[in-house]
Image (cartoon, rainbow, N blue to C red; front, side):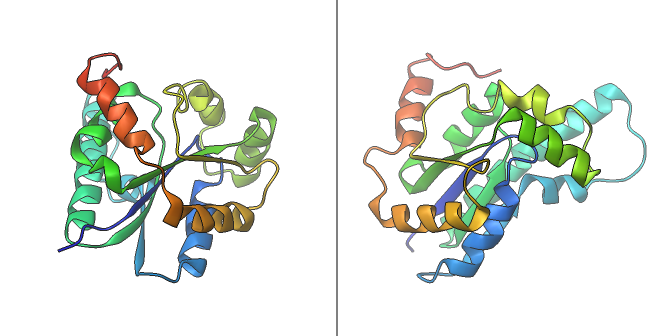
Length: 190
């Protein structure tokens, strides 16, 4: 069985990852793609109030389970569009460990901080300042196959750029290069 392709969108909250993912599902015509979102996984969690330690532990388990769900879906041949916030080094390290690096197109989704803040206020469903907290973290690893900026391009334009790039994935991929750094212990895991 041929493993599925993974288009992995990484960016801060409100950067436009989900909007790009929806556009990709509309325009990708060479397979059946599924959108897996970390926000959707979070929304499946119990609604009862959790203390800080319990919440942190649940959040970590949710992320670990999300990463393994991506791997399982791709392993059986499903093509995926993943949107995630790699705001802590261990999240990327875990993804590099469980996902097949040669099957991942790693896309950095950027947006100017002022625009992120405006989007957060307009949405009203995000913790104010969340994107700002994540801003200096999510792209710290510094290596992507492709990058897009939703401050200057529409989600549709970003999706079209990704679609055009998908058949021309580089060898080695960004995930392969980052995995090598991880294996050499030159990449933070915590």
